[in-house]
Length: 233
Image (cartoon, rainbow, N blue to C red):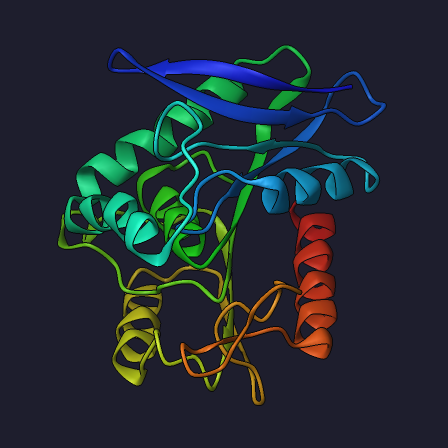
């Protein structure tokens, strides 16, 4: 059974999508959306995960389930959270706490994955939540905030990156690698040599903007992700 859930953070209403597997008690995977908001893409990924035996919760980072309809609108919703990583962390932590308290969820078996902006959201939850089991970024931003510089990372980290992604430069890769190493995290970074940004999205077809679907990178990255879930759960 799947349905939309409303949850509240600091008086603001957020709308997530909870997809249940057949097991009454099971691990749960949070899914963090792209800059466009919680759309059908992440809701469908939540349904895919139930077939593997996991509950899944597509969270809402913008409130009221807002979905952007243009590059300008998407950017206007995402940028304030990139500029205020404390607020970003508060929102994803709020979703984590909501899911942790759902009766169907094994509270000590929660991971997160995310796409693009959601990749950063996933990594920031790992930077700020000691109870998280794993965090996976699909073609996400990698640089960490100063605020969490001294925080220990307990979650297993998997970053999946396209070498030709113009939105994530070598500076982010270097800073991410240094951060993970200094924090002695259990981390992996996989680079797909021919992939650009948004390589998991079949509708991505704008190489001039830097977004292009790559079937091989999509399939391989999903396998790496699901292999990690088997390992941590």
